[in-house]
Image 1: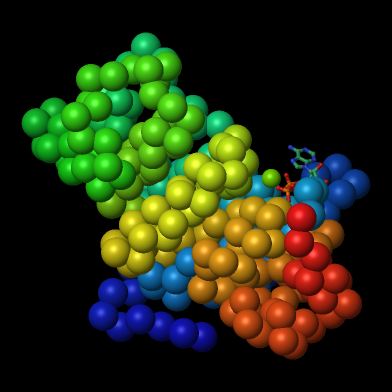
Image 2: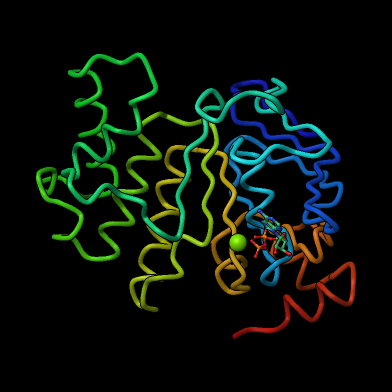
Length: 246
Ligand code: ADP
Ligand code: MG
């Protein structure tokens, strides 16, 4: 198992993580380590268990069995807001009646932070996603890409040890998607935040991420660098899924 002595806070470790719904095993004994600062893609076809895995890591869904540890701490039964995790979804889930600033400050709602400190941190996060000057706008006054940046700022404002993305760019057009991929990658690297990026898009996973976890039917088929998956696919499924581009 990899460790990071300098700052183990962001190390994520999944052991035998399993989720069963009635008559269906959505995630089947997932074993995975993500080192501090790494960006790992969960790649696989629709229904293979990517979102369910992410929801269990975030604490939004209770694991049927298995464990989740962050920075060596078992968080399997810890409530979501105590897990130190930032979330970015496909739907931005911004509050339409609140300004950009208030939306980002809302990320700190559950934490004991003074209003002044919350505003200072929110402005910092807004600057990080290059939206300074738009603090007083409402979501409807922003483009789709800008709204997704607000969602990213809201996830970053808590200084999370782990960032989770669930198909965050699926609603954007191709050009904007490329831009956002580069930007997310840049911020993730700069802050060295351990991140998982769920996508069904092979190109996105292979071009953005340090490693790719290929999933199929709730199981992890292979974890490897883009090069390894391409050159040495472990199963026929990986070979055909990674080789295919659409
Ligand atoms: P993905 O994100 O890879 O498309 P999901 O994790 O959303 O896949 O779903 C994995 C499987 O679990 C699918 O078969 C889906 O229908 C099923 N599933 C997801 N959530 C629920 C739920 N709340 N109740 C029952 N089945 C679910
Ligand atoms: Mg999904």
